[in-house]
Image (cartoon, rainbow, N blue to C red; front, side):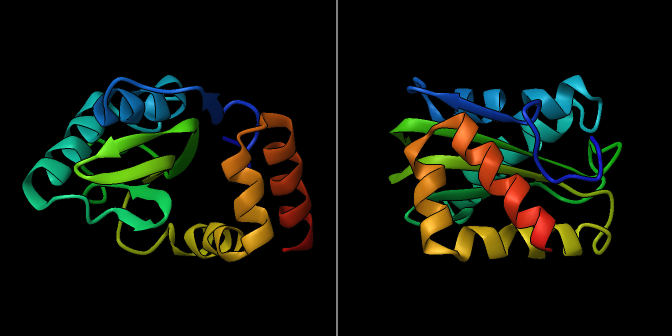
Length: 147
């Protein structure tokens, strides 16, 4: 991944997914393809939800998916999957799956802070929820230029 948080290679928009696990797998594909993570990391994220419930759903339709730093992580990375229709994640409806892969407990914090500020902007959040990939790309490009 470049020094940009998001580009066309790590943002995907889908209509729906049969299960949250399949959505999580699709959301992880850009990080798997770039070798930032291994399948072990995806499996650990699934195990976390199965063991601890939907605690990764932070707000309406938004899940910050992650596992323990370092386990199955080769380099810091993020990817984003937006579903036009909600997907049930253990009783919570999710449209936005943000995958965060960290190699340690601190190196990802600046990137996480930057992306969190984008998601906390209501207008930006609505743009992401709308599921238009070109608009999402333009939004991140604009927000990152300001940062």
